[in-house]
Image 1 (cartoon, helix red, strand yellow):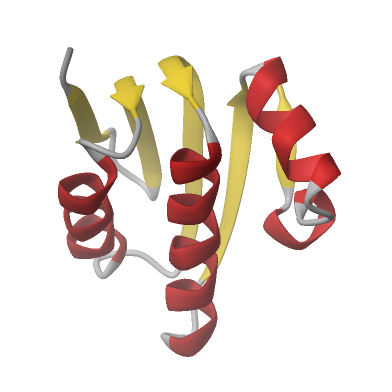
Image 2 (tube, rainbow, N blue to C red):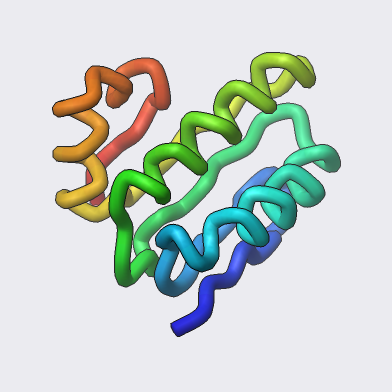
Length: 100
């Protein structure tokens, strides 16, 4: 399965598909390219079909990128499994991640 990082305009980014070790590298770069157009970014995770620690690492990297590029980023509609991984790793509040 593939993954997509889609620009929905006005800083809204939709993630669709499987975000794992095989796909997050390309997705990270695609996201950062889209993010550069906006100051306030909302990433919608509602259509993520597979998420794991690699997905979480990608979100952490994106948040760090946003912080160093004078941007804000929030994550909405996260799959329950991803939120659980974020809580176990104590990054749920840092990421501003919200369950769907």
